[in-house]
Length: 401
Ligand code: NAP
Ligand code: MG
Image 1 (cartoon, rainbow, N blue to C red):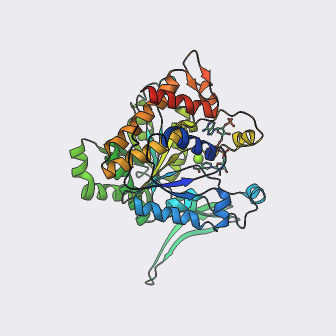
Image 2 (image 1 turned 90 degrees about the vertical axis):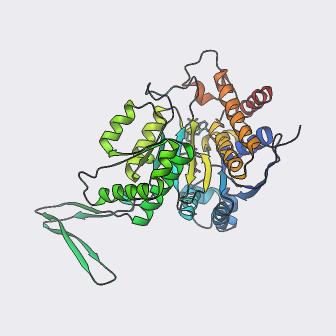
Image 3 (image 1 turned 180 degrees about the vertical axis):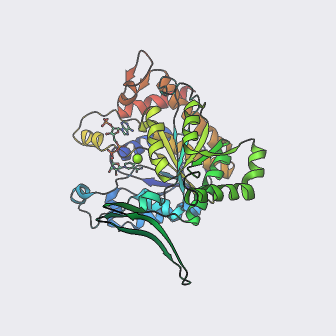
């Protein structure tokens, strides 16, 4: 059989623990036998990040800017316990944070829908993609616990010498205050990534804030989105037959619950934090959630939404059998390969991605699945497979297709 050719390399970011084990299995069983796989490989496993003083992470982000498409395995974000476990020189930052900052991108998370794993919300016929603005607001706050009566003020001192001063509150006793911020630059990048991704996936885009209460802060988000839509995207949206819809956050929540899905929901940082957990838990599990980082100038990095599945990895190291779900990691690869095929005009590569996804979902629908899915499926006659056998079953199904 002739293998499918690629013209431009994918940026491949390897990772840690159980997902690193799955990564190799997926390549060996599902990709290398069928594709003349071209990748530029970066080892983001914690050991090598430590050896290179985390330079490898920055290099992989630069390569992503150069080539336009990356696929990433889950990676460890070091904490105190990892300092000892990996004998780290420093508590290196989260690779995802580093890459997101370098690409100035927004993360879009979408549940993978499959028969037998039904969302709790019955009318969600299509997946809801959640886009979270990952900068500022309460996540970069400054807080003071007010000890006694007194006046709290908000003061801005411009580099040009101007001063803006407002009273927050005249305290008569103890209390609390909080200062938060955002930048027009970050909101603009967020808006552009959202509009670009909506066009790319041909889905309506919803955005919501609380601008009736926050008449300056939230209103600024609304205005920036509207300006960018009107000046850069309105015509393209109309041509694609999709819609940009702005509403209040409480109205958006009510409408989402009654919707059929198939939309992109852009959220401010805090709303996105809360709502992404609601949408993902209503749809099954993190193991069935894909994630793609999109930069405002159209660079894509695909990954699974879950972590390195540490608990399973320790079982694997102890020689025990694992049943770790590889679906989201497979979909990270198919997403990246399809995008590469689209950019390089390689219909065979795009077809391969579609088929591999179909084979993966078909395997689950035929009753063969990993343990996590067996616990929530509505299907009868389920066979629980181990990590390796599940991937082998997908290969069999793929070859039969
Ligand atoms: P996790 O790896 O997502 O796993 C948490 C639990 O969720 C697992 O123990 C497992 O439950 C279940 N689970 C997650 N993915 C699964 C899969 N594919 N198949 C089956 N079950 C799955 O989160 P964590 O244990 O909190 O984090 C482990 C490491 O991942 C940390 O070092 C963290 O820094 C890193 N992390 C990385 C990313 C990323 O790179 N994008 C994201 C999040 C976390 P049971 O144990 O009950 O089976
Ligand atoms: Mg959260």
